[in-house]
Image (cartoon, rainbow, N blue to C red; front, side):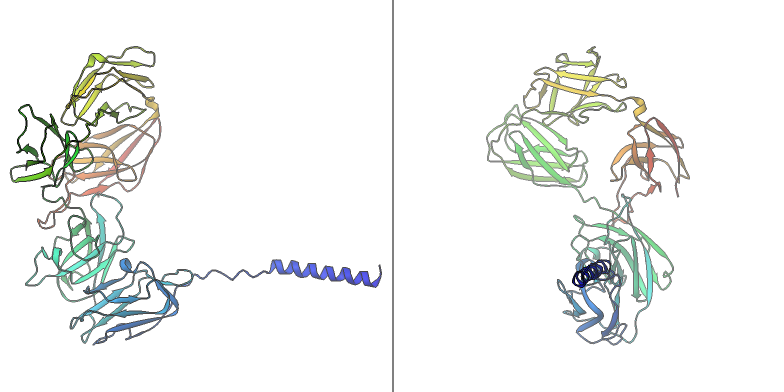
Length: 537
């Protein structure tokens, strides 16, 4: 090999080596920054006294931004108007707080940033930074802490506002509707709350799921919870406070009705139905008939009438229990007539412990059982009866079910007639049952029950009730024919013995009925019997 060729080969080898080294040692930008911003200084300094400025600047060692500032940043006592806090939508090395309100004299203010302060590049949060100052000679230093729970659900939403109202000569419970509290904090993304820099005194402790973020209780959209006793500071600083928030049921009120079709009005309402009646005050034909029943899902009453007649508007009188009476006027016009539509709760599989129920979009008036047949998988006729429940507008098909069977329900034309004269076309519904071994069973024993009766509920992960039993004494509770899956157990202490969970009422000082949750999920398998003991604590 000549020298020239050797030189070329050597050059190629060197280049290959350099490229190889470059690949192994290529620049990656370094490790990801996981260090949060560092507080450097503040003007005026944090924990200042005799504060008399209209602006605060808080400096960090790098560019920061504010995330979810409206939710995260809590100023206590509240200010109206709220101060201007920047940066919003941009980054800066300092946070500026510009006051638009005159500060109270001899008052300790706390600005809690939650986890809103993040570095600009990686979003690393400076957790729970607080800026505190006093317009007086000293800083208030008392603290209390506690926990907020949801009265009816195991999980609770984040950002629950917790408030302290100063109990003085002008205090009354109605202040929660129109007056901002003396101190506020929130639970952020946990269930815990912590008040700092409190003044000696007596207080009312309230929790709000504050939809409008205005620190006022608006019952139509907010949830509320309260600690029953008056809090005295400093005596109660060692107490851990627990509050259950709940949605109040408002006083009953019938809302403006709306015509839904030719022969139907919707009557929405708020509150609880108690023998609600609707009377037409306008002139109507002599053969005028009405029928009403509550909606299964919405706070609405369906009002059906026949025959249709001409009028521009109708006047109704609505009563509920012995105390409510109101007159409502609504427009009235000719519309399309509803057609009869039949549906079922179980489209394909009928559980062995459930009844087969037919529902209608119009009120069912009668069922001609002679025009109905039920056969099994061998096309053998199955004896049955149909029970019509006009109050709930449903028809129950009663027959002896057998496991692992298939059924066909045939309804000839005119088998069903509704309130306004419609009849059905031919209806054919196929459904089946599964084997008993496809299901699981829970045998439940309750211990340490403070008092009976109790309501025992089996729910799914969404807190939807799958099964429910009412128990008046110590006994073995059996939940049969459960689909395999994960369930949750809870026990309602039915204090007023009315067979349902009752919410609370703030002004009346009524707490919601207590619910005890089994701490673990319960897994149910097919062809499996599970014995479970629930010790109420």
